[in-house]
Length: 350
Image (cartoon, rainbow, N blue to C red; front, side):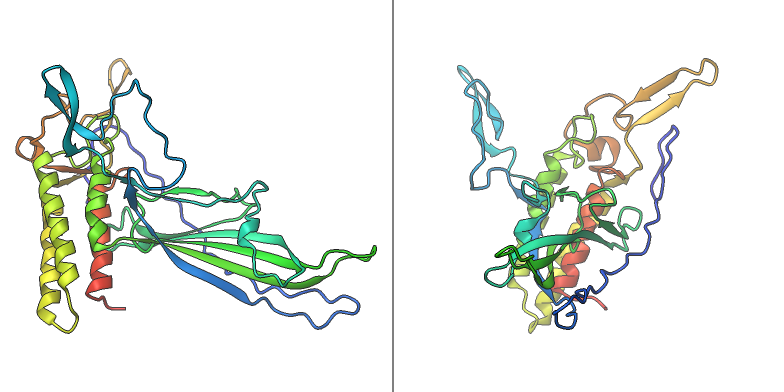
């Protein structure tokens, strides 16, 4: 159960309405046409997408630093003449995103394919369905949600940050379109078929990218505290070691050798126990206090660290090394991915 800090904090829970499946669409009967033909969906995917990505992925569009700026991609070391980048990487991985290109017309026309030769697609309907699984160990953060977006109901979001998206979250982009024969000789073009393309993207975590998530969390601040949610540096290095142990053990696991799966499960349990033992679970790290006599409001944006930015050893000084909040659920996110990886690599009851 999460502990509430002092101050008024209200949490609004929005109940999502049940999702209706896309109804089967048939072609209208017109003079000289054949009987209506139901849509035959074309399914694409699932395309696996990671929660994190390297800081400098290969590809176009990666800008270079201005010549007047000092790089902080490596930890800074002192030199006889000033400073220089050291050998320790400071940033290796950042949170990944799912970015969908809707095209200049915003109609996702590039996803409407498979028309016969000589016909062009005309988009008739769009839908994006985001499904977040329920994580039993963190049901307050991940209760299980289905969100449906259409152009007529708020529009479709094309940019989704994934750092806190639990493994097995899916995004389904559904494009309903007609294949139309162009008009010729002044005769109106004809519709030859209505199709449904369904593109599925699934958020994935792999044993060898589990440590990437730790790096991504360690790169971003906990609100304006100027401290990462993994606040103890020794604990961060320990978690990296344990995540790498999970990757090594997973690579050696063999379903035909039960002991190898037991070893993998033990590696997961050690990693998870370290997370839970060193985490403080809060609703938020800020505080709003109203003076009973004057009515004056005082806002403390980082009350969790009352003396300002702490040193590296927060486990020793505060009793925790990870701060988990509803906005930055660092511990719950790691636990969710452990839950997912265990089910994938070891098994889970249906």
